[in-house]
Length: 404
Ligand SMILES: [Zn+2]
Image: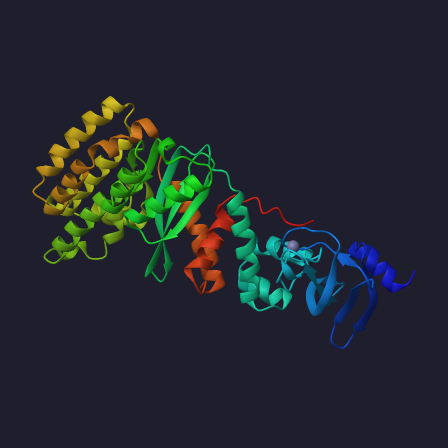
């Protein structure tokens, strides 16, 4: 068998396309395969599909293909432009590549499989391509998969933000709780981001009015955005965020007290932890402190009591517990704890909603760490658009429908 026949079979080319020559350059570690069409061939118009249009002229093009053993392989062809009576002169679509891509479909499928598993810069190094070319491929397949996405059964949504670059820019993530996938990622963290989500949901056969439960932090922007755009959604305030507000108040009490109470130096992380998570040394330090004299220790007890809320056996028990806690915190004579209690009071129903919905943003935390890890490995994404594409690729459960 001649090598051109072998390559023709291996590439799966069908008429009018044939392999006419191959040039292997061992020094350049490169195989070039020449593909051509039979003279006088006719082609369908790429715009309207009219068959049997004559070639008007041709343009030489090159596509990177799957490696030939350890060597890079390229397809080279003259691509005809046809003259269509309706559409004018149009460049035909070749069966092995997308229009305007410098890679074959099979090479793109390999790239996407690699990009799903490792950072873009790593893939770029491995295949010897500039990362901007890989981003172009990645955006194409992610956008296509997103366009096919079906959000028709979405009813429970978690919303949270993640820092895009060095804490300056934020993107908001909208997660389908039941399918554990990112539905939507968008710049910013204001009420408009929720409006943009509702629009995107509608575009993917979802229904903003069918969303019955959302989990958010207590940011007024998200509360407002949900109220305006997801009218039937009951809000659950994320329990980790609620505990953090009380925890931050403990830290404020500690910082103020430490100015007069040197015993507290170096104890910051003790008060931020739960007793069962303390190291032996931290536990010993805690036990050596005159805790009944310390405001910080009182604040800490108030925080632990707040956390106990989430262990209450029923919604009724939870209401009773929270009322008692609120009384205690507001009578603690510790300003940060009183402020935190007032914040809890203002978000009372949404905090207690957890006992009905049992939803939290822990899922997003997991997605967040996935994204942050990928980000640090890639040493920056160049743009928020790139970051969003990575979020979808890693956490969107996309059907990429890769060419096979
Ligand atoms: Zn046409």
